Length: 252
Image (tube, rainbow, N blue to C red; front, side):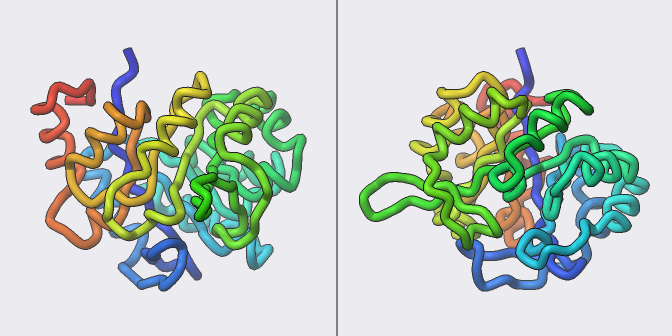
């Protein structure tokens, strides 16, 4: 049985670490390498690093930051933002990343997921899905830091990218991002129940109970969070103890 994971996320903008609310109102929260060292010392299961404006600005990935973080930390690193080709992924892996997190290019470059999975293995390829909820109650996938609508349903899109070779889904509820109001459990569960690969739930974690609910009620394999670690006294260490005490299957 796979262990459930606690995964802090770092959002990068112009090389600095930021935090947003619903993918807007970005606030500088420090240096990414310092934060990565702290999460590594706190025994986070993995770390996800997302350069949130690379695709919008059509610029290169911040390879040097990835290289520096991988040299300082020993937890697995998933890195996304600006990935457009197999060559980009190859360079990321050479810089020390363990997984490539693909969002915009998964939509705009249809063959990329299959080519990348064939080259590096499905376990290396994570497709990031940013979903907004409409007033009608339906959800839609957005790209370019959640600024561009795709017309795609997140469940159908998740099913499609897994069929192409994605080994994991990183699912973010845009409307909950940075609010600390709780995960969108209905969205998470609908995607997790539709695919055979692990789903990382993100967007809205505000309490340690939210980690549990994402796993138990949302059927996610992992929960990713940022604000709760940036702005409260909670940490991956405290989160792990809470989940162990709740009887969840996490790394001791």
